[in-house]
Length: 442
Image (cartoon, rainbow, N blue to C red):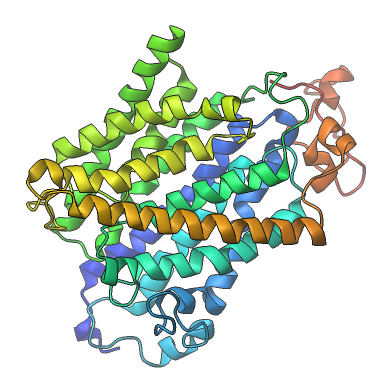
């Protein structure tokens, strides 16, 4: 590409945004890992980190091509071979554009990686790691890549073009998608041993809060980077990301205070995520006042929704459904209510004189994502169950999935049990001796 064609500021911003979004996956690992019990923290974090490797490879090979390659299915799918291995992009990297195509490739790769990692929170304590790898690879290929084409390919995807739905950064492709997949997976996987009779408390709430903070930090790249340039739309999305998330914290804590008499750190951290999820599709469509309204309602709605699993009987370990599906659906529909034509998306919703047309369009986009993801995820989960089996055995689940699946434990207590102190002899490594699973659980 001729260097004079590049806009250095835009390129720098998109590459920085890609790095910010990459940080969100370790943030999810901490957020989920802290909520896990001590005997399964490593497995939970490994499920998240495995997405960095597996989905990253699939994206380079054919994922980007399926999402953004030349359309071969009426807005449903890109040609998986057009950009296979990105070789053809290297030969001709869109010389007429101000942004290298590889910058966009890298930015969108982080979305794919993160979306798969989000699903993992529904399957804590009981899913075989090999089964998770097979499930996540199939799900990325058959669900995420096609839906990303529908939503993010602004020239070919049917949701973005034929339907005309607004989704600035992924309320449908990322959050509704992940929430539906989580619901399907946890239902087919089955409940954890002892749930809901036994209290399965987070083992490290400081990790949870650190993870939530990293997610908020990375989310500025997620939302503002989706502008594709360092411009007014990026600044607009950035500001709305602050507004909605701050309001969502308060919304969640108020509900907790009213219902239980206490405002919890887990509630504050979960409120952060709920607000971020809800504003993701709407961050370039609503005013900052609209973002505040969307955020406070997202926090309140998700705070109520996380209790549905006890009433309906599905063991969604870390409330992917209650947060990502509910807040993602709310944020997608809220565009039809709060959108204003002074925002970069230049559309009026119901409350700004635009009628119900956009609301209906948003509902169709959400429903299409729910149905497609639900059906295909059921098929994938049943195939993996038949081929490998989804769950570890009862003994492994009882003693700790970390030890059973990874031959490691998150916390080593043997020195404390044996009376060892700072002067004790060093303990053998995992490679030279078997580890002892942690007996203490939160």
